[in-house]
Length: 401
Image (cartoon, rainbow, N blue to C red):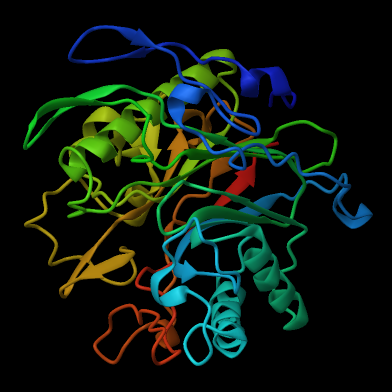
């Protein structure tokens, strides 16, 4: 296989290849940000790079595993106990008897149950407010004898509620940085056409995380964490589908750019995409395919649900879905909003060092995560019970000798 590649910091902070704006044909740059993005993107000063300061424990240095478990999980509102005046924390605004230390402790204990069963080596989490509360979760896991994560990172998303994207990793992280959605997209509002351009926080950034298994300052696996805008969100200009489409177009450009620079780099996009595999953002803009046999180029994108037997169907053909091949249940119908998308070079026999283990993709649904009706047991802050309205999703990757 190919020797490990090195992604230099200047690459992270440079302009990427230009993006195509469909309505006007203008070419627009996409930027990384370091401690604050270009002013026209409206990036906050604290939404920048976490450079994974400090050294990993010696036990993790130079010990590349043969296989890893990679997972994503929307934990549904994991908030700390600090009242942030810049966030609309709603029912998670700290107050005695509602969201307080006792409730947070119970919440963490319940998530420890889930993450212990999940047993992921690298885990992408959606809806985490701060790095402090994610560190609390990591420490609770350690105390309970669960997975031990040496890296904890969170990127703010500019969401009005304050929910961010987090990563827990058993292996060193070279770089963790936010990519603002800078793609300009023209769309229709009730008042007429407008252009979504990043000047307001209507799109959560992509969280780029570089994993360094051997601790030698080389990127061995690159993750692109996502949390796209939810369906039926009427507070945004243009239809919510347009916002997901815009994020998909930029993510497609990121795949093309990274793999154009290094066709052997294993790139994984994962998280809560709030869209189904057959809808335009994933199927058309990102061109994420479900047929592994049709994946043959490094820049192809494989939706790993195809490894779990999912095929391209429409929203009216979901009676065959269940808790083993889905991550979300809406009014009794199982669907897939959480996805793991692999660059084409990660197919078995592909060009990347890390490749999909066939048959390993699926949701994780132990009985305690489900209600008596068999649906995800959502967290209820008033009762202090439940887990999440999503199920975790995981797969295995194997190092190809």
